[in-house]
Length: 124
Length: 107
Image (cartoon, rainbow over the protein chains, first blue to last red):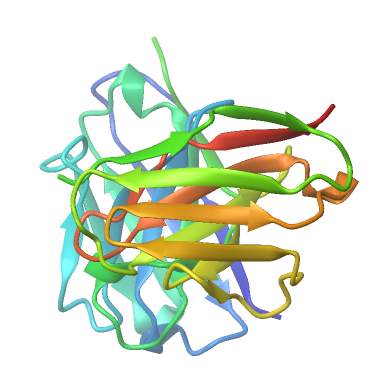
């Protein structure tokens, strides 16, 4: 079964850091771009960041650029999101999502498999 | 950045109705448009990509059309299990961008 499982969310104070992880199984992880998409409960979807299959192309939403860093470890079938200088407006459910076709750049993300999400709450 | 605008934001309809959701891009995105369904409390599900190609396993009552800046998602005969919020998303270039969503409810 193709699966993505996020972890690492929690309650954190403004200005602090958090690292999210996404463990993949059931597919050739190193063939696919993977993304982070977030959703404030009850609100819409916002793409956060994406990384191509070989880490050759990486992108960020303007809202997180300079504060968040995406990375992947293909040997461990894992994706990460290092989140620094967190703000209240970063509070959301963070999903990792797989691209629907292999060997594509992150720019053209279409998301066919989603994890269940990990909740990040930024509050003092 | 290209903006994606969906209408309506809320759509009450009866079982069996034909339902149409519109998505408009602020610039030409060719056919690089996907549609997702998110049922209450669930993760989003890819329905359609390339504006009109149905993802495997999606019921044939769902269809998509359009190109350039104007796109539609149609449910030919609304079923109770179709109650959800539907999002369009453009992917012609970075950043991938979602529309604001359309909540489909049963009247």
